[in-house]
Amino acid sequence: MAKKAEKVKDEEKKAAKKAEKAEKAAPKAEEPAAAAPAEKTEAAEAPKAEQSSVTAPVNPLERTVEVTVSQQALSAETEKRLKDYAKRARIDGFRRGHVPMNIVRGMYGQEAYGDALNQLVGQAVDKAVADGSYRLAGAPVVEPSKDMPTDGKSDLKFTARFEVLPEIEAPDFSAVSLKRYTCEVTDKEVTSTLDVMRKQRATYKEVDRASQKDDEVTVDFEGKIDGKVFEGGSAKDFSFLLGSGQMLPEFDQAVTGMSKGETKTFKLTFPEGYAKELSGKEAEFTVTVKKVSEPVLPALDDKFASEFGIKEGVDKLKKEVEENLKREVKSRLNARTKEGVFSALLDLAKFDLPQVMVEDEAKRITSEYRQNLASRGLDVSKIPFDPKNFTSQAQRRVRLGLIVSKLIADNKIQSTPEQVKAFAAEMASAYEKPEEVTDWYLKDENRYAELSAAVIENNLVDFVLGKSKTADEAIDFNTLMGRAA
Image (cartoon, rainbow, N blue to C red; front, side, top):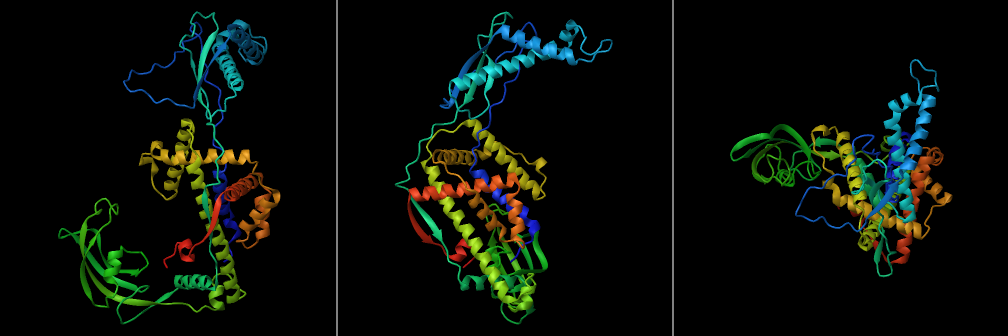
């Protein structure tokens, strides 16, 4: 059915989520923090490691470079900054630009020195990284060297530690077997979907017979554990649909086949993790059926079509249902095929991961998880979140991001304007005014970039499939859509 154009932001989020998979996650290096020599301020000392009998594993991606900052360059840069301060300083009793240097030095000397040192150390580290052709995976950690001079005259020495991106070998896809999933949308699937839509708008009429699947039953029930009624285990005039999954399977099965006025006692074991106080425990329920009502489905006619905003009649409704199904099936098939390709890439991606990237990604996942819970109304301020719990997921994301970036770069996989426009039009086709939505996507630089990244990802999937052994595999419609057969 046609969707409202104002819901387009939901589609934008989906596009952005797809685009994120194809982006490289390596953070940029930052300038190191400033340090000051002993005669100017407190001595900057390297952190002392605690004594331990456990030897930390060697990080194959960690690199160390030594850099030196000359006292002459440091003094010159400090003076340059002080002169700049002198031009801008506003001090009572002096005209702007005429403050004596000894006063400027006393007020801004420490700050000028720190900024100068920070700049020179950063430049020295950047040069060492460039000279070594290192590809940084994260910002360098800069510390004073162990033999840092403290006489205030000798050149200053620093050690920069950082991780580099791993060397990734191009995978050989010739022996990889992958599947292209297919699913045909026929009149049967359209009719089935229309039936689901009719059931969603069903009314219920009381009947004098045993209850069966899809009936609405109204019951009184009481549950006991160890002979005692437990909290939340009893209700009066409680209604639910049989076979809908609203109740635990054992409860649903026990009530199926009961008639009005009938009472039954049965046992039920709560599944592990159901609720802290009920998990894994056996309860005894007594249920009395008070009413059985069968569904009355609305007729599939023009009036029914009008309830979905289709004024042209039921034939138009059927056509829109068919188009929506084909669009949804295509999306799910692509997602399943893509999942198979990415799983294969992960199996082939045998390389060390930069820990800084894994840690950063784990923090991102933690933030996403927190925001998701908060959006559901939960008070996340009282919930502990440890990024280490998401390490495995973070490792998968980082590994996939690196191998995807490698393949895209090496094989010059790109998107064309025509592909991006077609992709935007396809996404917009679900809305009432697709032309307007397409323009909305394409005329914004950020949204265009997100669509382009998604297209590049799709092109990568096609590239891998083209290099691998592939076979078509048909999937049942209900299985693909997550429906019970």
